[in-house]
Image (tube, rainbow, N blue to C red; front, side):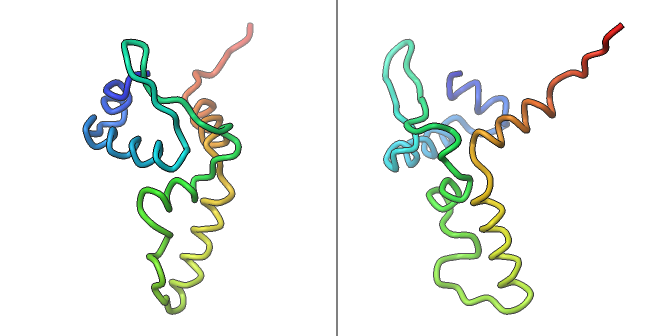
Length: 107
């Protein structure tokens, strides 16, 4: 799917999305190919890329880098990191596909 289409579907600026993909490409998460049939593909299997890895690349570690948190924030930040580490691109894609599928009725 072209980046422009993805941007449209997610109501994002295509230019902003291109910047994010450039960061992911430099980090080895995606590969890019130019041309008419160009675009981005995953450089690694989707089940080996965690959401934590992507968030840290694009926004830094949850809760900030080297920031000392006080209760209850320290537990919340730690829990968020664990949740993100436990989800992969594959698990998110499967969950989204299941949520958007129309129910099947059998007669």
